[in-house]
Structure formats: C-alpha cells, structure tokens
Amino acid sequence: MKQLDVPLLFRLDRESPLEEVSEQLDQLEKHAINTAPWPDYPYKPSVSFAVAHSNDCFFVKFYVEEDAIRAVFRKTNDPVYRDSCVELFIAFNDERAYYNLEFNSLGSCLMAYGAGKENRRFLSEAVIREIKRYAQLSVGELPNAAVKWELTLVIPVEVFCFHGFTSLNEQTCKVNFYKCGDDLPKPHYLTWNTIKAASPNFHLPEYFGELQFL
Image (cartoon, rainbow, N blue to C red; front, side, top):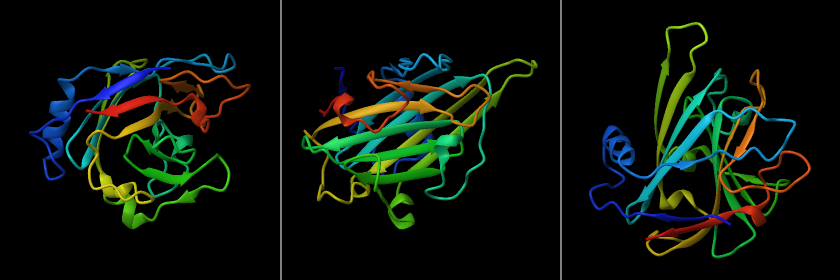
C-alpha cells in the first residue's frame, strides 16, 4: 500500500490566485498515476499529480499527456468519467464511506459520497461550486502530437460536508487517484495505488493508499 505525505504550504490559502497555487504545486514532488491493472485496457497516458494543503484547503494539481482528448460534459455531476478525466477518492477516519471527486479537462466536476459504488449521494451544486478550478490545455502542431492538459484544484475543507472538519492539519486519510476516459478512442483506467479486481472498478476503498496531512 502506497503512502503519501501532504506538505503544508504556509504561503497559500483559499484566497490565493489560482495561477499562484498552480506555480507553487509545480515546485513539489510529482506522483505518478501509472498502474493499469486491467489487461483489456493497456493504454497508459502520462499522468501525475502534486498535492499540498493549508490549514483549511487541499491543493491538488494533475498533469496529463494523452493521445486524444474528449471534453463534452459541462454541468455539475455530469458523467465526466466518459471524458478525459482525473479523479480523487478520499475516506477519513478509517471509515468505509468515501468522497469521489471526478473532473474532466474543463474542470467540470462530479462529486458524491457513500460506502460503495451503488446508492451514492451526489453533492449539491452549491457545495461543489466551492472547489476552485484552473484548467490549462496545449495541443502540439504536428498531426499526431500528444495533448497536454493540467488541472489545478483548491478544495476547501467545507466541501467534505458529511464531516465537521475545520482543519486538515494532522488528518489521516485513505485515498486513491485515477485517470480514465470511458468514451475516448483508447479507453483506459489508471490508478495510483493498484487495484485487484476482475474488471475496472475504482470504488474499492480496500485498495486506497494512506495519506497524511502534515
């Protein structure tokens, strides 16, 4: 099981400009999302992420380079996993229930909470709106050039609304990070911490890794 320590960045908070958050995360260690557990889906785009936190915000930046991009869904809680999508699943206090946060390359977000894949509770647009998002895209000029995109997220502690947190300091969590794209020319399902299952399924908290807010 992988472990991840999230550094505290004193210079950032929820009011920091997104460009500044993005630049600060660029200076931190990158963690690869490079495990393809299902042989039927061998394609592996280049994906990594960097993380940090302030007292009351979780900062995440995803870095993606892939052969093709799909960005169709724009509304809150649309099925963004069918687009070029990055995801973060997080559980607190060793609980079975967890939050899933899923974003396409536009920053469109699906977020829900529950103890398994079925019967999840979608969070309201008012809650999800509190997540600040900064998307960047670059496409090479050559016909077969890879598409590069980045997504910076500022996730206030209040977004984890089924918990009464006022601070992330010293919280210990279980997490996994993913990259997928159900409707892309090359569907793929990549994980940070590996999963052992017969078919693609990210909703398996027993395979989450450890995360510590320092």
